[in-house]
Amino acid sequence: MVRILGKASSINVRKVLWTCAELDIVFDREDWGSGFRPTQDPAFIALNPNAMVPVLVDGDVVLWESNTICRYLATRYGDGAAASLLPRDAPARSQVEQWMDWQATELNNAWRYAFMGLVRGSAAHQDPALIAAGIAGWNRHMGILERQLEKTGAYAAGAAFSLADVVLGLSTHRWRKTPMDDRPAYAAVAAWMARLDARPGAGAWLPDDTA
Image 1 (cartoon, rainbow, N blue to C red):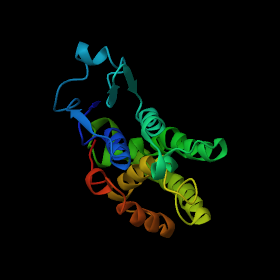
Image 2: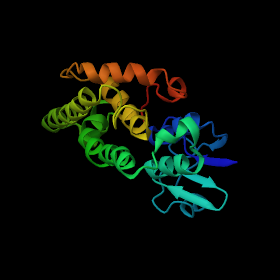
Image 3: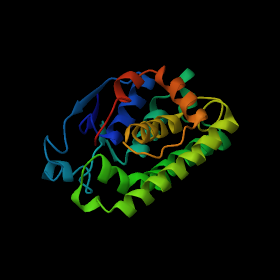
Image 4: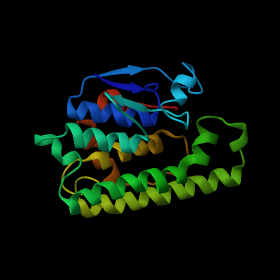
């Protein structure tokens, strides 16, 4: 059975759990991370030298980095209707992976300071000017997603639901739930999120998070 190491409140763990729901993968999840078994434990470090969740163990395969884990699961277990999660056709696949990579590099970096200050209450992230700049950058990046969704009229990478929607949906949920005074009312994003709410696993893995 597939093992997933990481607490369910983690946004990155929930990417993997949602992907499993879409693929009907049976898994065993173990609580690791803040409040649970420490990821500095030598047993965990042996699996992921970065000491971060999630980690996937599938037989002899051990993987870390949440987006990579999602790609692996879709490649190994996705067939039939689930094949659209990560298409085998190179041009279509590249669109999905492009938006997944954008989520991990550009979008995530845009919200980090503001989220840490406004939600986590981190003492190291309380500079009002930097919080304001973080919110502005976060909104600007969400505007990029808004224009993409206006263009596709459906999902992040095109007409079909894919892994790009899983990872971007979780990040967008965080944007919508973070308390901020200046949040644009992006209509295409709102309509897209309503479509995501009907997906398998969304009800369980798209709730409010603080991790």
